Amino acid sequence: MKKCIAILLFLLTVIACSTASQNVASTTVADNSGNKKANDTVRIANDSLEYEVIIIDNGFNTWLASRAYPRNYHSLSYLENKNYLYVTEWNNRVLQPQRYNPNLYEMSIDYRNDIHYGYEVNYLIYNYMIYFQNTYKQKLWGYVPSR
Image 1: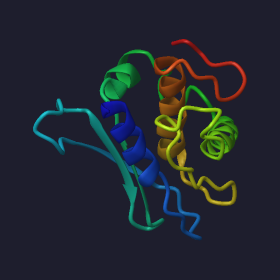
Image 2: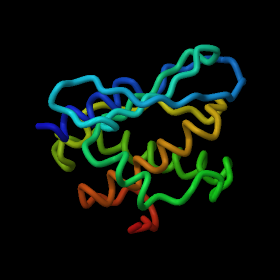
Image 3: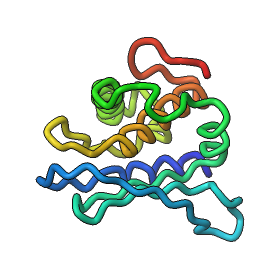
């Protein structure tokens, strides 16, 4: 159940798009629930772009700190391309609940190539997709690092 809630919250708040092209993001860590450990919630917000991404998944912050490649390891264009491919496959699976677990793929993600979300947002979405694929034994697209 925690997995479903975490994914649902992630998908609900992934991206509310804007037409602005400013790409400054800030990251804060919050504790939203009494039964969650600190660092279970990652919030990425940028008021000038009018979007917010909230990732709530037990273990993601630990995985991000210990196993993910450091920031600036991948270029922004690499992250944007990978995120587009992962999100496209994710959205295809949302439309096929008889074939893919509907508890994992509950809602589609609105990720658009024409919006510049910035490095931090793309970095965290990319790493969440890698974490998701490794944790839930899914393969969205291509080679998935096992970090």
